[in-house]
Length: 189
Image 1 (tube, rainbow, N blue to C red):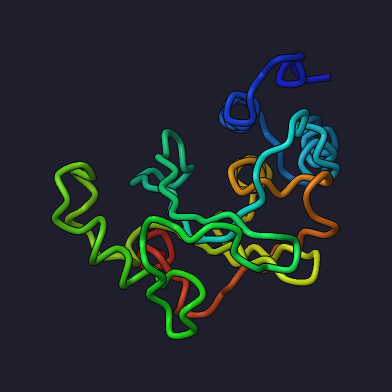
Image 2 (cartoon, helix red, strand yellow):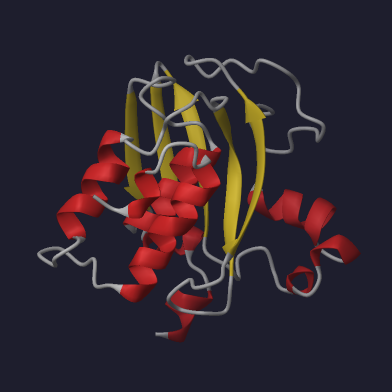
Protein backbone atom coordinates (compact mmCIF):
# COMPACT_ATOMS: atom_id res chain seq x y z
CA UNK A 1 0.00 0.00 0.00
CA UNK A 2 1.36 3.41 -0.92
CA UNK A 3 2.27 5.94 1.73
CA UNK A 4 -0.43 8.38 0.55
CA UNK A 5 -3.06 6.43 2.48
CA UNK A 6 -1.74 7.53 5.87
CA UNK A 7 -4.57 8.70 8.15
CA UNK A 8 -4.86 12.46 8.48
CA UNK A 9 -3.51 13.37 5.05
CA UNK A 10 -5.57 15.97 3.20
CA UNK A 11 -6.96 15.50 -0.30
CA UNK A 12 -4.27 17.72 -1.76
CA UNK A 13 -1.50 15.90 0.13
CA UNK A 14 -2.75 12.55 -1.20
CA UNK A 15 -3.06 13.88 -4.74
CA UNK A 16 0.42 15.38 -4.51
CA UNK A 17 1.80 12.06 -3.25
CA UNK A 18 0.31 10.21 -6.21
CA UNK A 19 1.81 12.89 -8.44
CA UNK A 20 5.24 12.13 -6.92
CA UNK A 21 4.70 8.39 -7.42
CA UNK A 22 3.89 9.09 -11.07
CA UNK A 23 7.05 11.11 -11.57
CA UNK A 24 9.27 8.50 -9.89
CA UNK A 25 7.68 5.32 -11.28
CA UNK A 26 6.18 3.87 -14.39
CA UNK A 27 2.39 3.74 -13.95
CA UNK A 28 1.46 2.82 -17.50
CA UNK A 29 -0.96 -0.11 -17.97
CA UNK A 30 0.74 -3.37 -17.02
CA UNK A 31 3.44 -1.72 -14.89
CA UNK A 32 4.20 -2.64 -11.29
CA UNK A 33 2.26 0.30 -9.79
CA UNK A 34 -0.55 0.74 -12.32
CA UNK A 35 -3.22 -1.49 -10.72
CA UNK A 36 -2.67 -0.05 -7.26
CA UNK A 37 -2.78 3.55 -8.44
CA UNK A 38 -5.89 2.91 -10.55
CA UNK A 39 -7.62 1.23 -7.62
CA UNK A 40 -6.94 4.26 -5.44
CA UNK A 41 -8.19 6.67 -8.10
CA UNK A 42 -11.18 4.65 -9.29
CA UNK A 43 -12.50 3.50 -5.94
CA UNK A 44 -11.91 6.86 -4.35
CA UNK A 45 -9.90 5.38 -1.49
CA UNK A 46 -8.14 8.71 -1.04
CA UNK A 47 -11.37 10.34 0.09
CA UNK A 48 -11.39 10.09 3.86
CA UNK A 49 -13.47 13.17 4.56
CA UNK A 50 -16.35 14.96 2.91
CA UNK A 51 -15.35 17.61 0.38
CA UNK A 52 -18.01 19.91 -1.04
CA UNK A 53 -19.29 18.75 -4.41
CA UNK A 54 -18.68 21.39 -7.08
CA UNK A 55 -18.78 22.12 -10.81
CA UNK A 56 -16.50 24.41 -12.73
CA UNK A 57 -13.48 24.75 -14.98
CA UNK A 58 -9.75 24.22 -14.49
CA UNK A 59 -6.30 24.35 -16.03
CA UNK A 60 -3.04 22.52 -15.27
CA UNK A 61 -0.53 25.35 -15.69
CA UNK A 62 2.87 24.05 -16.81
CA UNK A 63 5.29 24.08 -19.71
CA UNK A 64 6.48 20.57 -18.81
CA UNK A 65 5.04 17.78 -20.97
CA UNK A 66 5.03 15.42 -17.95
CA UNK A 67 2.92 18.01 -16.07
CA UNK A 68 5.59 18.04 -13.35
CA UNK A 69 5.17 21.01 -11.04
CA UNK A 70 1.89 22.05 -12.63
CA UNK A 71 -0.17 24.66 -10.84
CA UNK A 72 -3.83 23.66 -10.61
CA UNK A 73 -5.96 26.72 -11.38
CA UNK A 74 -9.70 26.33 -10.91
CA UNK A 75 -12.89 28.35 -10.80
CA UNK A 76 -15.66 26.33 -9.21
CA UNK A 77 -18.97 26.64 -7.39
CA UNK A 78 -20.84 24.28 -5.01
CA UNK A 79 -23.69 22.22 -6.41
CA UNK A 80 -26.21 19.58 -5.36
CA UNK A 81 -26.08 16.07 -6.84
CA UNK A 82 -28.61 17.13 -9.47
CA UNK A 83 -26.36 20.04 -10.52
CA UNK A 84 -28.41 22.81 -8.89
CA UNK A 85 -26.19 25.59 -7.55
CA UNK A 86 -26.07 25.70 -3.73
CA UNK A 87 -24.56 29.19 -3.44
CA UNK A 88 -23.97 31.73 -6.15
CA UNK A 89 -20.24 31.98 -6.83
CA UNK A 90 -18.27 35.17 -6.36
CA UNK A 91 -17.77 35.40 -10.12
CA UNK A 92 -20.74 35.72 -12.43
CA UNK A 93 -21.42 32.83 -14.79
CA UNK A 94 -20.24 33.74 -18.28
CA UNK A 95 -21.12 30.71 -20.43
CA UNK A 96 -23.90 30.92 -23.03
CA UNK A 97 -26.09 28.71 -20.80
CA UNK A 98 -25.77 31.21 -17.95
CA UNK A 99 -25.21 28.28 -15.56
CA UNK A 100 -21.42 27.84 -15.58
CA UNK A 101 -18.12 29.33 -16.72
CA UNK A 102 -16.57 29.66 -20.15
CA UNK A 103 -12.78 29.07 -20.29
CA UNK A 104 -12.03 31.88 -22.74
CA UNK A 105 -14.25 34.50 -21.10
CA UNK A 106 -13.04 33.70 -17.59
CA UNK A 107 -9.37 33.67 -18.62
CA UNK A 108 -9.80 37.07 -20.27
CA UNK A 109 -11.65 38.59 -17.31
CA UNK A 110 -9.87 37.01 -14.34
CA UNK A 111 -6.44 35.74 -15.40
CA UNK A 112 -5.13 37.68 -18.38
CA UNK A 113 -3.12 40.73 -17.29
CA UNK A 114 -3.87 39.98 -13.62
CA UNK A 115 -0.60 40.41 -11.66
CA UNK A 116 -1.67 37.65 -9.25
CA UNK A 117 -1.43 35.18 -12.14
CA UNK A 118 2.06 36.03 -13.43
CA UNK A 119 3.81 34.76 -15.51
CA UNK A 120 1.24 32.48 -17.16
CA UNK A 121 -1.35 35.23 -17.55
CA UNK A 122 0.27 36.38 -20.80
CA UNK A 123 -0.58 33.11 -22.56
CA UNK A 124 -3.90 32.56 -24.36
CA UNK A 125 -6.67 30.70 -22.54
CA UNK A 126 -6.16 27.55 -24.63
CA UNK A 127 -2.39 27.31 -24.17
CA UNK A 128 -2.48 25.05 -21.09
CA UNK A 129 -4.29 21.69 -20.74
CA UNK A 130 -7.75 22.33 -19.32
CA UNK A 131 -11.06 20.79 -18.52
CA UNK A 132 -14.49 21.10 -16.98
CA UNK A 133 -16.52 19.27 -14.34
CA UNK A 134 -20.29 19.09 -14.83
CA UNK A 135 -22.75 17.59 -12.35
CA UNK A 136 -26.24 16.33 -13.27
CA UNK A 137 -28.50 13.49 -12.11
CA UNK A 138 -26.06 12.20 -9.45
CA UNK A 139 -23.34 11.89 -12.12
CA UNK A 140 -20.15 13.89 -12.57
CA UNK A 141 -18.67 14.26 -16.03
CA UNK A 142 -15.06 15.38 -16.34
CA UNK A 143 -14.36 16.81 -19.79
CA UNK A 144 -10.59 17.03 -20.27
CA UNK A 145 -7.77 17.49 -22.69
CA UNK A 146 -6.51 13.90 -23.35
CA UNK A 147 -3.07 14.77 -21.91
CA UNK A 148 -4.79 15.05 -18.51
CA UNK A 149 -6.32 11.57 -18.64
CA UNK A 150 -3.83 10.13 -16.12
CA UNK A 151 -4.39 8.70 -12.65
CA UNK A 152 -2.57 11.50 -10.82
CA UNK A 153 -4.40 14.32 -12.62
CA UNK A 154 -7.78 12.60 -12.26
CA UNK A 155 -7.14 12.18 -8.55
CA UNK A 156 -6.41 15.90 -8.20
CA UNK A 157 -9.58 16.81 -10.11
CA UNK A 158 -11.73 14.37 -8.13
CA UNK A 159 -10.32 15.59 -4.82
CA UNK A 160 -10.67 19.31 -5.50
CA UNK A 161 -14.18 19.07 -6.97
CA UNK A 162 -15.40 16.70 -4.21
CA UNK A 163 -16.11 13.82 -6.59
CA UNK A 164 -16.01 11.16 -3.90
CA UNK A 165 -18.36 8.19 -3.52
CA UNK A 166 -19.75 10.05 -0.48
CA UNK A 167 -20.93 12.90 -2.70
CA UNK A 168 -21.76 11.52 -6.13
CA UNK A 169 -22.99 8.22 -7.57
CA UNK A 170 -20.93 8.04 -10.74
CA UNK A 171 -17.92 9.81 -12.27
CA UNK A 172 -17.39 9.65 -16.01
CA UNK A 173 -14.19 10.87 -17.67
CA UNK A 174 -14.55 12.20 -21.22
CA UNK A 175 -11.21 12.95 -22.92
CA UNK A 176 -11.96 15.42 -25.71
CA UNK A 177 -9.72 14.94 -28.76
CA UNK A 178 -11.36 17.75 -30.71
CA UNK A 179 -9.73 21.09 -31.46
CA UNK A 180 -11.81 22.60 -28.66
CA UNK A 181 -9.57 21.22 -25.88
CA UNK A 182 -6.21 21.24 -27.66
CA UNK A 183 -3.29 22.81 -25.80
CA UNK A 184 0.40 23.53 -26.41
CA UNK A 185 1.31 19.86 -26.00
CA UNK A 186 -1.01 18.85 -28.86
CA UNK A 187 0.13 21.68 -31.12
CA UNK A 188 3.81 20.81 -30.57
CA UNK A 189 3.43 17.24 -31.85
